Amino acid sequence: MTTIAVIGSGLIGRAWAIVFARGGCDVRLSDASPAQAEQALGLIRTGLADLHAAGLLKETPDTVLARISVSDGLEDALAGADYVQENLPEKPDVKRAVFQDLDRLAPAGAVIGSSTSAIPGSDFTEGLAGRGRCLVVHPVNPPHLVPLVELSRTPWTTDEAVAKTRALMESVGQVPVTVEREVEGFVLNRLQGALLNEALRLVAQGYVSPEDVDRCVRDGLGLRWSFMGPFETIDLNAPGGVIDYAARYGGFYDRLESQPLPPAGWQHEVVTRIDAERRAALPASELPTRQEWRNRRLMALLAHKAEASKQS
Figure 1 (cartoon, rainbow, N blue to C red):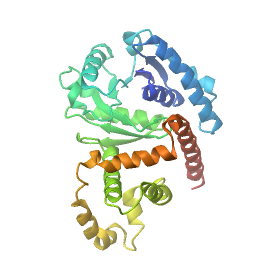
Figure 2: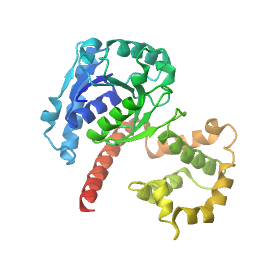
Figure 3: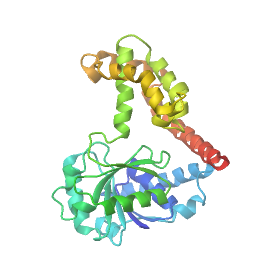
Figure 4: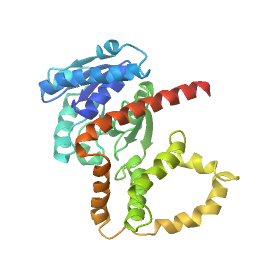
């Protein structure tokens, strides 16, 4: 699977183009707006230069960029493609329409993945003749800096499609996980949601400030979670491993699960307070600058993890 069609040249599409080209694939970039696709090449060039400066690109930016071309329409992008990554807006009708075209035009052996972050794949693939080759391939933003990617089956996705996609993702440096059955939010967002719900509950009930919640994760949980998952973390946090940890703390977690969110949930007035505190700390006009800072920190962390992996 070395010829990749990337459909949509927005933020996620551009990042996917970097991922595949960096991994040695030939990438055809397609967008309904040719001007936007051409503009995307310039932004991709900048992203590759940043990766090179951080020591995260084995080749020169120009070498990688040469593997990316802008296609003259959807049919041109799909001709001879081994894999298709769709990145259009999060609207079911849009997804259904484009997947009808992708299934009709893509080569019979091509796997078709969607970057959707919320819509179940069954919602837009059920009526397709080639629905067995379709699945959700949900990245973490930005995918060229955060390697995890969720491969979520539909009820009819074939084992072959999953296996081929998983092998492709591993070959280009991503870290795939397979979601064996459709579930709202997939896996990563559900894990994130559990933490966010508890954070909201603690702030709404006056136990802690929003800033101190961020400190608990940034300077506490996040340090371990940057190189270990939750199950390995608890395995190392009790003398007898997971069974011992469950015996010690399982009752608390059971009780915690039954506690409700504050009234109105994420429409609670505390959300407005949290937003106000964030805007006082970071004006909305500075969000893009802070996002660039985040990306640089992610690059530095990736470089550190890569070096630590070599040493271990």
